[in-house]
Image (tube, rainbow, N blue to C red; front, side, top):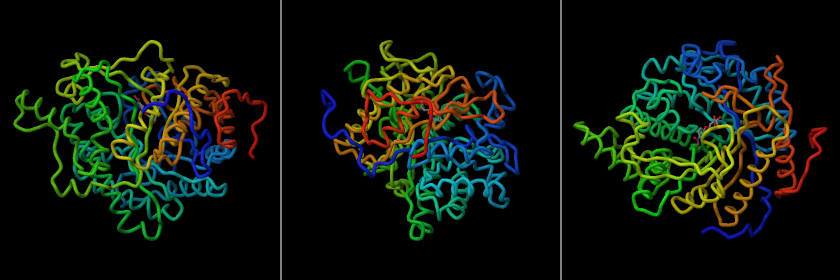
Length: 489
Ligand code: PNW
């Protein structure tokens, strides 16, 4: 159901949370300081600098390891009540396991969290945002089924160390990037290129790791710490290109490949992987002469263990695509998950383009996504990322302002339709290391000056506009901020 115009209540409820997000590897820097261990991104960018567009790395990046107080000050300027950031596993456990705990890393996160709490800012912690300790990769990383025990060992320690103050946990950020691009593809770390089999082993191992973290929390921490645990997916809108059955199935397979393989086992009533993709991979595997499906299934016991293992669904929403069936897309290696699903995607010229090649401003995409999730599972949702990239530095970011205003109108529409949406978190607090794009794409509400050793941060127009939305609880399309001074209210 798509309302023909924006109607209903146009005001954010008082208990609706607003926040901004970052991730450890993208902002911390200090890659080998004070006992931090190497992780798979450190390793990959040092071994293979040309994998990053501008041959940069995140050895220093925005240097938040040293600038964290300024970061918290920016959160206070914006007036957000939540900050979503991630823990670097190898800063706490340099070798991945808990036999060696790096106390200086623990101290850093304690300082960081305490600084937020001093100003009433709620920490929301992502336990894994793509930066596996390199040592664990040497034992196979997410291809080794032992990973779920290693992950549980790490998250238990995080609950013990920080759970007295952290009440919102996200087990994984966008596992499809880890599995499909890191193990299946060739650009994201660990870049092992095991496509066709690796993605599927990784998917199953991530889902079981998530469920182990959830149950560990329920068993030993929930009654004393009273927190919530969720998992975050990229959920863009996938629109079938035509009304043919083939395109409808193609769009559905794209959804399943990107997030359904994680969300369905956790949030659906029956549990287990989504049927269409399981059947499709089994069929393709047989055609290719494999004696078994390249996509492993859950045992009945595993399926029950995973089912219902989350308090909320984190949604990273950015954009939309048109999807068409294409039996043999020459862009994809054989075998691979992308070859298995047999699709092609299109971006219409009329949608305004960001700097990231995949990112356009697609009308009502967030609203459609939220309504679709409501009809499938009706989960409690937090939008854990949403944002817009620009190529060049500059403080007047009107296209980002437009993007945020429209997204926030979609949020109001979804709230009016009864979506159980608890909060909205913008990506990102500031410019940072944008993975393979290095520093060539800027997502920040605050601009970062990389030529300055202090990595000075300056609020953009979008920061002032977001601040006004949070304060007034409405989206005013005519508000023109006075950018001469940013205050803490
Ligand atoms: C997210 N897509 O990745 C990540 O969680 C962040 O670390 C990252 O900086 C941010 O979005 C911007 O890229 C995405 O293709 C990667 O739709 C790809 C997509 C969406 C999000």
